[in-house]
Length: 343
Length: 255
Image (cartoon, rainbow over all chains, first blue to last red):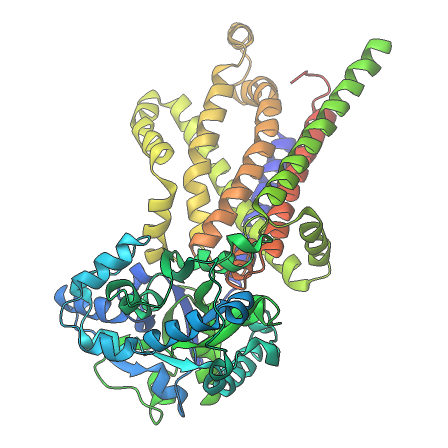
């Protein structure tokens, strides 16, 4: 009986110590508490009135939550809070061998690709775009959730590497200050001199060029190339892959398996390809598509950001990835204290 | 003696061959895939694995994950033992409890995690998810062990008028303890795996699952692999520990 009592006490002690250890994770009550939420949880978690969500999901959420009875609005743009110019988010990289051996194709491609922003503005129906993206690997985008406002919010336009370089380096420094593992460093060779590409070099042996991109705004950035099918001198083989699979499309040991052109997050591009020996950055593609949505209809601006968020829990989709780091960077910019909490 | 040595040598040899086979399969996959972000190299993973030991964050996270696992397992064990005892004393309770256990056993863990996340904190969600899976396992194991108690001994105790307390402490518990302790090691190891999965799903960053998620976001796949290896080693150590406890504590009974 004594042994049973001792065993029971030991078990109770274990449970007690474990409870204390688990329970000792109190959230800070001052400043802002950042909480990771999935896209599905947005608007459904008690105690959270502000969510940081990327477009096009942000507008879709506002629409569905409002239809469900709680009026949500888009109260702030992280791009505007960031100030100056919006931060880089997705970039277009190309194999160095492609740039060197087939400058004519790269020039043609970029000329057409640069017209994407104006092409998107002229679109009135998005079903063709969604069908095109779907036919190249599938997408979570739905035609009804796209509108001219949503597409504008995605901030899609091509900015040449030389013009985007300073913005990327500043953003990289700021993010590295929060989490050095996310970016690493990249050299000058990583940034391609797009205007200096020789438009006369042609690689006749290469007839098809593979283009990889993650789903979402980066896939929308290729919509014109998929739908309008402009003549760029080669057959374009598009692949829309899941966001967590895009990085592995440029890291095969056998270069033949790697994407010729790839749209990928700026941090992953810098970290994996920053030496510029295998790939070079052609330019920025999406320039910040993060928004704060809330059931409190008051717009959040640089002037009232601290006051609005003080003592609040903010749900962030992908808190430990670029969206979370960007939001932390903005909070740092406005000297707002934050802690990482739990739901 | 020769037979004993031969038998153990074969066991060790085959265990070594099995480990060698797993590493060979890993090496071949790495070579065939040729992409560090899909299958990281053994060397890179081992290098990251040993680096983990120097990180304070790793030990803190491991402690937190262990605390969650221990909490879930302890509570489930006590609850399962209590339910079995009540079921023994009052048979209708067993019937009442059977459907609840069946639901707990079959409900999809992923769906439960997603729902629980909305109600409980990300710190507590892995504990509750683990409990929901482990509790029916314990209940089944304890019930089966109790059912397996020698009925002859119980009859004899009844004939000789042995007190109920003595029947429980001198006959039932000594008979069911070895099987339960062995199972406890297996369940703890399984619960650790489950807790880590729930941590990943529930965004519990202060745990091994959280470290895995962060490594994945930072495209540090070798680190992710090293964390996986660390959790496998931790699980194996738990099982080995409980196996040793059983061997030492219940020498009188061959389990």
